[in-house]
Length: 69
Image 1 (cartoon, rainbow, N blue to C red):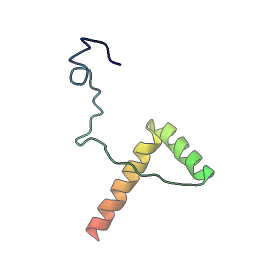
Image 2 (image 1 turned 180 degrees about the horizontal axis):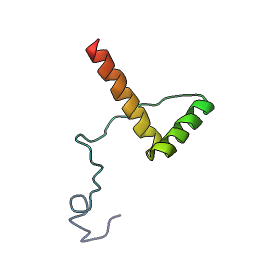
Image 3 (image 1 turned 90 degrees about the vertical axis):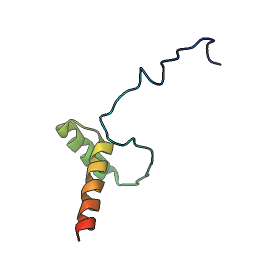
Image 4 (image 1 turned 45 degrees about the vertical axis):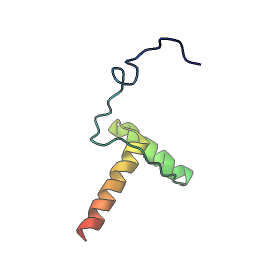
């Protein structure tokens, strides 16, 4: 149960900005081998990003390539 009075600015003033033009709203589940996941983790660490960021970038690149051809 929420506290009476609450914080009226909660969803507006204290929203975290990820710096994206469009919000991320869809999910895709991928099953992969353990070694592949470890490789992605290592690349993400070296590039100072997350595994989902790498996957999004790879998918964007793939889709851009498919649009051109």
